[in-house]
Image 1 (cartoon, helix red, strand yellow):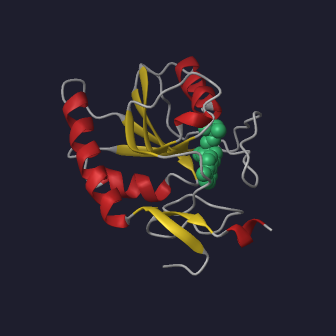
Image 2: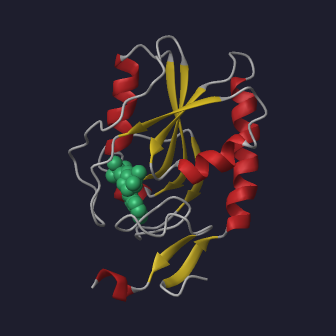
Length: 178
Ligand code: IMP
């Protein structure tokens, strides 16, 4: 374990096993209408996207958006589009891939944006959900793990751009925030 990690909340094995379940569920739900376009939000959702797509037994395509305005440990209300999609979403079923739904502001902004660009539907799959932090009323259709109100790192999630490569989700020691 990384020396600065206080505790592991979700292990690599648990993430793989839950991704397999989600992949099966997604395939079942989209079987009739065809595979959705997966839209992953940079940079945090990359490891989860990579794990999840292995377990969706369909011909999947994916694209990336960067909407982050996140600094330190507090989500900011003001979200900017830093990188837009290369693919047109007009008439497509979109499955947004998120690392974590916290206040829900990112999700609401991106969902609205994709709908305004003519997407047929927008659903959300997230590795983690922190429902106690929600300030806007949005909900992911597919949730890996619900967690308490704690700042977490690993499996894509960072603190000042570090710890994204940890193969598990954990909590940093208090000394990291001093
Ligand atoms: P929201 O717009 O408040 O839902 O924030 C979502 C984004 O905030 C996520 O995609 C993460 O980048 C970041 N975030 C929220 N909570 C955490 C956390 O516990 N650790 C690391 N990043 C987080």
